[in-house]
Amino acid sequence: MLNNLKRTFSELFGQESQRTFFAPGRVNLIGEHIDYNGGLVMPCAVTYGTYLLTAPNKDGVFRFSSVNFEETYEAPLQKAYSKTGKEWFNYPLGVIHNFVSDQKDIQGLDLLFYGDLPIGAGLSSSASVEVVMAYALNTIFNAGYTKLDLVKLTKRVENEFIGVNSGIMDQFAVTFGEKNKALKLDCESLEYQAVECDLADNLLAIINTNKPRKLAESKYNERVSECAEALEALKTELDIENLCDIDGNTFQQHKQLIKNPTVQNRAQHVIEENDRVQLAAAALAAHRLGEFGQLMFASHQSLQTLYEVSGIELDTIVSFCKTYSGVTGARMTGAGFGGCAIALVNKDRFEDFSKSISEYYTEKIGYAPSVYSSEIGTGVVELT
Image 1 (spheres, rainbow, N blue to C red):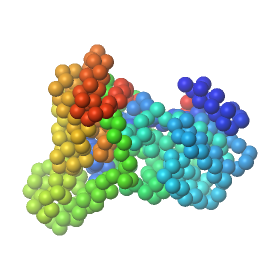
Image 2: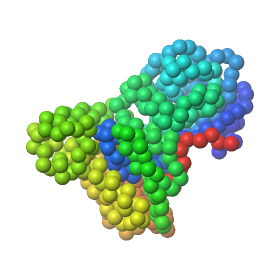
Image 3: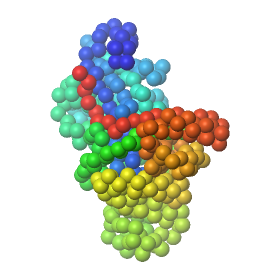
Image 4: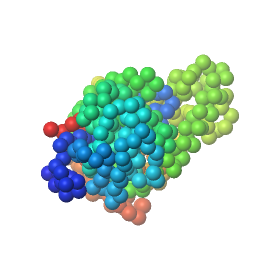
C-alpha cells in the first residue's frame, strides 16, 4: 500500500516523497459526551487512520492532494489563512494557520493524504488528519512543540478554524494512544492513565451504520448548550465548575434545580456516564470483561434514552448484539446521530457475526452496514 502511495506522490508532484507519517483514528470505549463536561473518557487508538507523505518544494507553497478526495488545493506561504468552503483540506490548512500564527518557521511542502477510516463515521477522521499534519510539521521543521502542545493546537483548529465545539478527547487519543491500552483521560486536567486492555479472545468490531453525519451540522452544539444550562442551574446550590464534578448520588439529591426535564436528562446521562468510566477502568484492569460489556450496554441505553443522540440505525446494531452469543458488550461510539457502534466480539465468531449482523441490519434498515475488525493501536508516528 505504501509503495502505491509513493508512486502516486511521484506522479502528482514530479518528485519522490521523503517522509511518511501515520495518525490513527480512535474509538471511545466508554464515556460519551463527557469531554466537554470536564469528566473522564476512555478512548483507544485503532489500527485504521491517515497516512501523510511529504517532500519539500522550492516554490514556497503547500500543495494538498488526497487519494480519498478529488479536490486539490495550493496555498502560498503567508502569515495567516482562513477556511475555504467545506473541503477536506481545511483541516491541514488550519494546522498551518496555527503554526504561522505561533511564528514557527515552516517552508513549502508537497502533501499527499490517504485515509482508510470511513469519513463522517465518528472515528475521528478529522482529528487524525489534523494530528498527522501537526506532527509532520513539528518533526520536519523542528518546531519544538510537545505532544500535549500538538493536542491543544489541533483542538484549536477544530474549534476555531473549522467551527465545531468539540472537546479534547479525539486529538488526545490520536496523539497519545498506546497499543493494547485504553486511555482513562480526565478532560479537565488532561491527566491520564493507560489502562491495560487485554481483550483476551475478543476483538474490537467496528460497525459503521453507513448513515453519515456532519458533526458541525448535527445537534452536537445543541447538546453542549443544554449541558451548560444544566450546569448553571446546579451551580445555584453546588460549588462546581463542570457537570462531572459531582457523582450520580449527588445529582439525584439536586436534580430538581434543573426545571427543564429534557435538560435534566442530559445532565443525568453525563454524570452517570462519568461514574461508568471509573467502573469500566476497574473492570478492565481486573480482566472482568463481562462486567465491562454490561457497562457498554448501559452506556448505550443512556445515550439512547437520556441524551437522545442515537437513532434507529445504531439501536438496531446494539439490539442485535444483545442477542448474539459471541458478543460481550456493544454501544454507539462518537457523537452519535449515525456513525459507528463498537462491539467486543469473540475472534472465532467474527466472520459469522459480520455476516449475521449485516443481514439483520439490511432487513431492518434497507441497506448494509460496513463491519471492520480492529485491534487497539498506537498513536501518531513517523513511519520509517
